[in-house]
Image 1 (tube, rainbow, N blue to C red):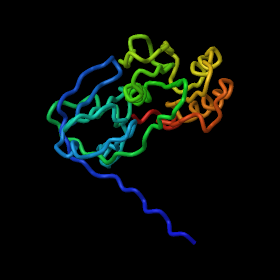
Image 2 (cartoon, one colour):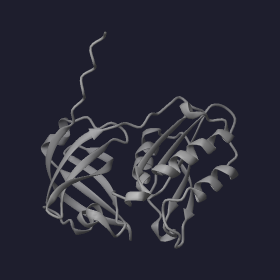
Image 3 (cartoon, helix red, strand yellow):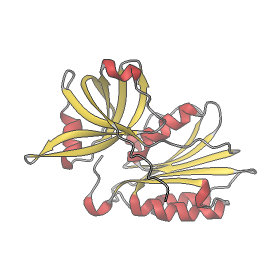
Length: 232
């Protein structure tokens, strides 16, 4: 019987907040700084687990690495108004200490003729990182957001269509499924990304079959669970 593969362990990092800025009313950019960052590889679309204190106990909340440069690491946090992650992100100031573990995960970049991505707010930082990584290749993005005031800054090679909930609760697949139904797939081999609420992600992934994409042609990842409310 072959030996089991060793478990990959993530590192622990001690950082400080270098700067915070508001990208939209519900999205906050957090720039972290540590000399350790410069010698660490940060895979595309990886996430880190930030250590927080909530109700007298330690909890962890995961955030996608939007970008890294030298001793700086940038994450974008959704301020959804409840939970320890949202409270932490909303209350940060420059100079605050931050402990986290990571990195974990990586977005694939296949050799495909066309790319499509569907994501709610929790997945947009990963889509932004992806768009920068693929260079001039076009990327069709359907971005579900609370309202049109929440448009997230994406690179210029993105063909983005904003799907505004306008008062409807997050977590339903309805808007994304309608987007898939109306999308005309270009010729050639395609590849898709679906990021958001876990159950919605499964529904949208399966719906992409109408564009000729089977499960091997789709990277699908649930970033939060409606049953336990958003944690990012």
